[in-house]
Length: 133
Image (cartoon, rainbow, N blue to C red; front, side, top):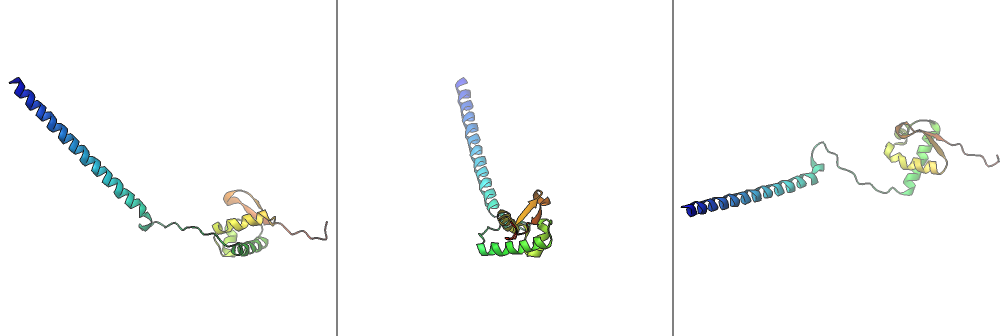
């Protein structure tokens, strides 16, 4: 009789273990499925309404930068000491597009800046005459 009870107990334990392993496999498969589903959603985020797709940048040609720089310098001469946001509408470009031309003007010694970040003000440096020396 004790042997019969042990056999039954052993069969019940093995059944519980099989059920446990089956449930673990089912949950693991569901977790993997959820993971792949969320990865598919993340790759299509730009398609959701309200989200702006990121625009890839392009390298601007030198003549475009020079033309933008010339217009920016003229705007700075007309209105010295203004922030970049004041020059952007005059030049016809965004403040972000004017960062590179402004940096090139500073490197060439035609413009100086005072301040940091949004409080930066730009001043044209007058050209020195060749006769004064």
